[in-house]
Picture 1: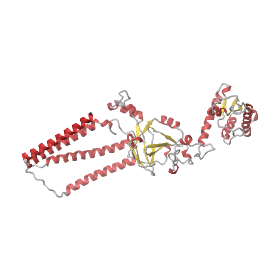
Picture 2: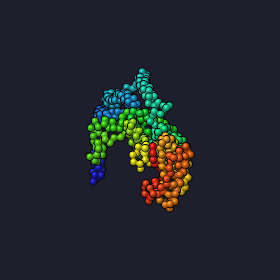
Picture 3: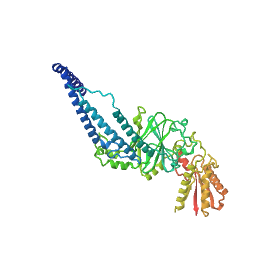
Picture 4: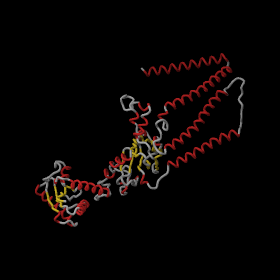
Length: 498
């Protein structure tokens, strides 16, 4: 029904236009061609003058009405240190071009009205005016030169690189159709090398795992940045041209395949601070979901965003990513919780070049875990709680032969016993319940003896060490699952005396 009304309205409007045209043609015949032309010129001139006044009015009114939605106006001050310089340059350009725009557009329509065709008036032809041409050439040239100089000054402030990135927050953003891969360096604060030939389903960025700087790098689903800290973003692309665009930070840089670029900026407002500023304006008190009046207001749902500012394909819109700016403490906590991509997805697989050996980062983590267990055992008052599990002491399957990697954990035990010269310990071996119980008991005793022998070989006095095998008699988990059985196959020591 609604479609029929629209069609009928269009048909009716067409008929009205045709009839008006016929009436105008009839009036022209009655008045005479010259008189009719003068009337047309006068009405067209008046309409043009009315149009430019209405245009300027609408231009100004709409600008004032929507000003709190524009970047650089209302609550949308730049959220980065360099953003103020960008906005200043924009304002200067806007004022200069705005003045020229208003003057030229007004004169264009004013002259069309003033010099319309009228009876008794004849157009004057001016073939050449050197003075006017020189002025019209020099003024724009000087203005453009000043704008370019100002722009270069801002560019040099915005785009300096740094030789020592140790104090920077670094990250890498790689664009592809239609998403971004975001990579942060780990504790070493260094991004490892990449090679596009290494890109695969399990290595989306082509990271070179032989470069140990890659081992602690982590991938993130969103960009998280600390406020007040300088950030260096390495920008690249896999397939077509993309554009790394952070509107609230006044950051925009093309992502070009095969040609990494960068941008350095310093966030000055956290996400919460920006939201608080938005909450002062009535426009942002409206529901975030127009169909749900009870949804949170717009200011509460605001987030900084990363967008692609190039039309990179049909899925271009889906490249939006959330950007969070938080305090330094929140950022450090977040970063510390992110798992290394290598450790989570590559470690122990066929792509792992370090298979069969411990990495330095793993040894540090193992030492940290051991130290925490030891401190807890030493401080424990209950004798049954004075136990330290040797998580990384392992044996060949079914044998009492230490694996080569067990030496790292056993060396920590040696260091502990040398640090506490009066400490006496019981080395305990445990198995799961698979197989014969008597055989398991014997195997656990042998394994405990092997550990004791290792400690003796490294200078620990025999009277400080006892070895005891418990077989499967003291399980810590269910033997019904493989995970539980693995938990029960363990070596530990109990502190008997300090």
